[in-house]
Length: 204
Image (cartoon, rainbow, N blue to C red):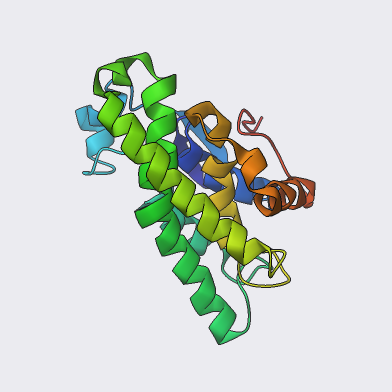
């Protein structure tokens, strides 16, 4: 059985938990937090020298880090990876968008406002910059979701799982999702998909 090391309230860690729930894939969960220094301890750094979660330990003892890489590995051969080569490329496109445009704004602003230890970094300038950047990302998503129900077309994919994780928590970062009605409808579609679990869900 694979083992997932993850922080229960982290959106990046929610991604693989959500996917494994939708795939009905059993796994062991080990809670570990980046907020208390646990991911920087030698025993964890031996598993992931980058000192971050999520981290997946495979049945054979190998490790895989980075949330979107974990998603792609777990979803291989499932309904969450399009068969069409162009749609697969679109899935990768949106995964890169999530990491380079969406996450640095929406996830970071949420962290600045939610975690007390990040409060010192929540300067007015940074809050304003991440609010602007996050709204730009949401507008890009809104424009796509006005055309297609999911990011690669008619079917849910790993891209939707990745973008759902922090988008559904965007209100905690001070974003007004009512300005993006297609995004709101998409959030409902993902939540209505088979096997869905909330961010607070842990196995066992």
